[in-house]
Amino acid sequence: MSMIDIGDQPFVRLSGGGNDFLALVEPARRPSQQQIAHWCTRGLSLGADGLFILRRGDPPARVVMEYANADGRPADLCLNGTRCAARLAFELGWNEGASRIGIQTGAGVLSAHDRGDQRIAIDLPALTETPRLFSVDLDGEVWQGFLATVGVPHFVLTWSESLATAPLADIAPRLRHHPLFASHGTNVNFVRWVAPDQLELRSFERGVEAETLACGTGSLAAAAIGVLTGRTVLPTQVLTKGGFKFDIDGRKGERLPTGWTLTGDARIVAAGKLTAQASALPEPARWSDT
Image (cartoon, rainbow, N blue to C red):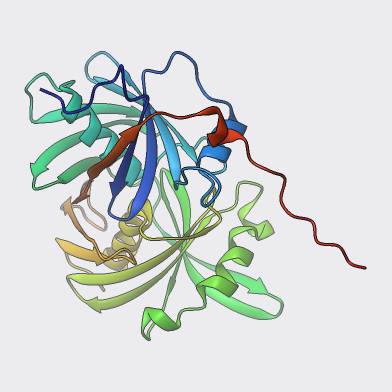
């Protein structure tokens, strides 16, 4: 028996490894980009890193997930959002007693597995492109990292000192919008290789336009780069700012795994009703200059 009554609880709030999401289950109508952006605004409304809509589908995808970032724009993939979607689908009984469930995302159908103890695993295929070295010039200072695509683009920079000293707040917004990454931009991550089976990660996510407490696609991108460069062995653990650890494993391939599995925390934390006031936000303040 589900603990969530869909008739009485139009929205559900979930947390996956530190990323937080709002979920709408089979809503009568899709919210507009502006509504989503308003609901995801912290301090003025519910606040979240993104929102997803969950609908029942047909095998192999028993669940169809539509995901939007906090700015209301759609994104092909959010791994922590997909794991939370799986958590909610299991809770609703849409898996029909099976331990796995297929989820249709913008990046294809992914398989999710309930590992118990509030942990959900997602299986992914091999990366479509091998991560590659890439350099960006910021006002005469060159920043070298790796480009990797895990459904969405990531620029991953290696940091040799404590990640507490990584200049994420200063550098990441400028890299995220750099013309070299075209109009869609990129997510930006700083990674520190702690041990062959452990790495640490800080992430600035496009669409949220801020550092987040976790990033599933960024974690997998960093692990892939670690394997490619010989810094990482699988299975490995990724520690993100939120304090949760992701377990990443993969099927052996010549250079990179032929498939990946990412496992981490996914919890249902609240459910409730949206009101009209949740999207009644003011215009940003415009300070006088006289």
